[in-house]
Length: 300
Image 1 (cartoon, rainbow, N blue to C red):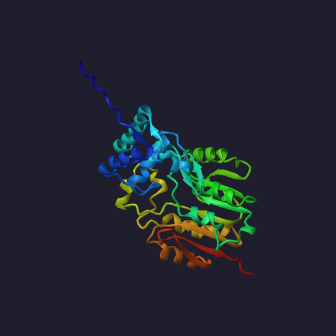
Image 2: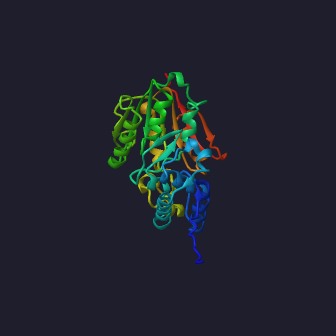
Image 3: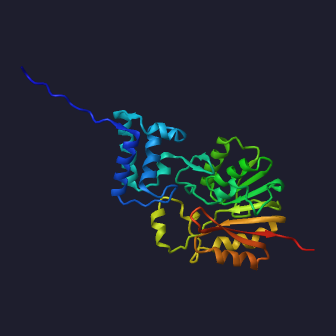
């Protein structure tokens, strides 16, 4: 009798495909930090996107068998990540911030600010959320901070300002996506240039704060440089914001700034020198001082 040979097709589950993809990413020696900080989480984001899976259903999804076509989609996406070194968020066109999903592309930074944690806490203990009626997001980029703030403060009007027209196209897309067009206003301007004489209860900003010669900028090459670098010490934009903010703050209002991990003392000194009160810094989930703020009180 003749013998028959069978072709055994390899069966992979979602979980196994994530591990396999993570190994590929790990061997490629990639830079992380755009929402994930390790190959496994990056692989999970790519696999779930390629297979159109819900992250909220992750535990059940891991055991699902992936079709050959699905495996091909995952392989293509992982290959793109390795060959082009583009952040995964630019490949998937999506990122989460403060529990909300946003559209992103190379016109804006990938959302990953510790300000998300502050918004989820209602900016406590800095601000009294019951008194927040107007918020200004300086350098809004994708609009993630402005949108998240509007969600957290449902009675507030939020102005989202950016000097980049392309960035505002992305911000407006996210504002429409979250149906906040009546409360979040995307404005073109340099820092406070679009705010006129308006005053706010909170001014918040994730400004450029990387030193212009910082070697880590090479790993961020796909992101807009103007949204990252701010002079030799990284504080050029923060100095201007601190100096100009008082003219746009109500008495008792707060200026809240993200900054680099080693800039907290310098930012606090700038706030104190400008006349802000109750100046403090907040630590992120890693225990690093990444946000500082001060209260503006008009005297007389």
